[in-house]
Image (cartoon, rainbow, N blue to C red):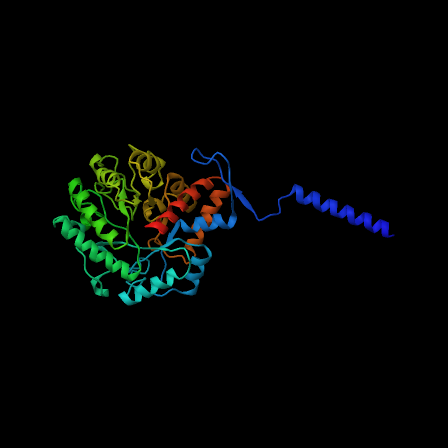
Length: 387
């Protein structure tokens, strides 16, 4: 009897050993897909690390002048890398979004930064003039528009930029979606020239004032994101509302501010535009186009900094493509940070989860290589640690 029990015990042990040897029961890992830029030896990444890296690539808008538990849980669990703040809530048509006063905003930003040990990008559109979420009616310092600054001296532009930068720094905001470096080719442009958002119709004036603006922001510790690559100044439409085709109006001089500022070494981040130029890409807008971002921006003018998408909720792309297609095209084109204002076509409390899930599913189906996630999340980490 004892001999039979011992035999059964040995047999069971051998079977377990065989099962463990033939089956990986360690925590799940995903293999990094080889690309031309990947190391020769493939590496592995855990599902949790992959999820965290994807979270860092998402910047989301949310409602609330204080941080509620639902938003906090979503940001924490998904390891979301950044938020974008607004004063106006478009779906409700009320100035009742995130901003009420300097004291309230500083407290909101502090609560956001307390969520994770990975410092968040806290972003805002603070160009000055018509596009400035930090309005004087809330108690903030009024900043002239780019159009006004373009008529001032470079010293004045830098002075105003530094005032703005110090204000942002004191609030805890660390990313400004400015300056606009679009050349004012079409003064009647409904979203650039018509709003006084361009320094000038002369690219040299744009370059010089943009550089002064960036310097003022950098001295205050603010990351400037120049926009809207490859140039939105000649357009006759508004990408918030629908497709904008610049094929017949785009001028080569519109690329010059991006190229010269990047060459000068003052640019760490660029925002792409949703405009279509069929001379470059017959199908996709710049923000979803490898030809625009990977070939022209990264290889053509040698930019290795962060690329932010323009708001993926804008109708120029949200009316044309599904969320799944948008994130796949954007990331594969070279975009590092997917920005969703959650403030144009409606509001979804779980918008960040939708974006995160869409990216993860695209990775699992091998539509997005893991190497792209590693590349972008490493760029983000580098900026957060060293800027």
